[in-house]
Length: 398
Image (cartoon, rainbow, N blue to C red; front, top):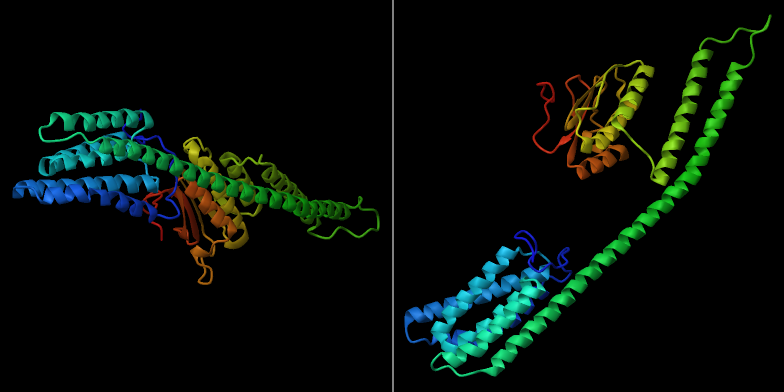
């Protein structure tokens, strides 16, 4: 038995079928069999009976069509909703039986099919047995009615046919799900292949760059200056330091790339804060960064780490800034700079692959990414939970 919020039949659900028109067409074919009770109800002795009978037939047809089309579309139905639908159908059958006599019992066939469609197999089986017993007993106890074993057989066959249809629909949905999983696995395998190829090609190039950078640093250092030897040119020490930094960056890039290929790359918010501070210091920028990440929600830290890495890269490459301010809250990260900001030929919506990847990561975590003019005169990068426009320390975004 399912809970009130669970699907009544415990069925496999997925997206809507590829031919959504099939469900309404099949439901219409079933509803044609209500023509007999409709004719009898319309010929009732009094106007109130005719109105009640026709309304009962219309309600029964609408409820059956709703349940049938809902099942075909794969949408789940709560147990309470299924029970209410069946009870409403029984009321409609009673109205039709009062107006049309024994012909109204045809509606119980539709009740059987609805039970099989919406209820779990055990509940549906017990309810169908009860309905079949009612079809057997009522014609024998109500004066003027005659036993109709053909209607009993019709109800049993209809229930069996609907059960077979339901199982076939479930198998069809499982087949669609399996096909989607196979397609997803094929895409994942292709991505793995591209990652391995990237590792083989780019890894070799980065290794060569690292070796050549180390060789250049050694050539710059040379040996100690001897008597009569020309003095070392100004800036050689700085060049040596920059080459050493290049070697470190290349080694870090190699480690990151290998980690991505092997699925072991770890990005932490605290580590990215330390890396950003080091990068801004090396660039001679005044940086105001948070000293701790303890207040940040755990589920947002990975996305904020990627955002900080992307923002730091953009500031160092494009902003020409002298000051950077990073603000962290439990559910937001805001990064402002006083650089050149957004130029007319480079709007905020034209972010590169890094910003697009960050946006996808943020969306998966329930966050949004915003870029635009900041209060420092440069660019603002904000990552925060979905909601109104972000305000930091009482400042409105420019």
